[in-house]
Length: 114
Image (cartoon, rainbow, N blue to C red):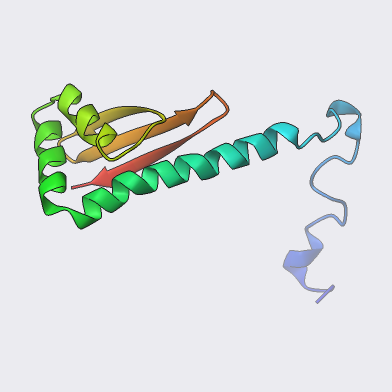
């Protein structure tokens, strides 16, 4: 395959520069903190998605409040699921977005369509 014309076009060097002088040394501390925080956020978001999936009444109430642009009621319903972390909601006629954040290190956005 080394003689294949399309493979001959690519140089044998790595695409990324190998000069490490332009980048600081790798420190995974913050990445690991973010990953642990995301795990907690995902557990919190599971409270909401389980409630929506399991309760026709809750799903109805959430969708109805969002379609009426009643942000206070939407936020109250989401909080009623047991979520304790910070979140922000946005909704359109097509669905809802819920952005969960934790200590400015990371976040998770759920996009649910209806």
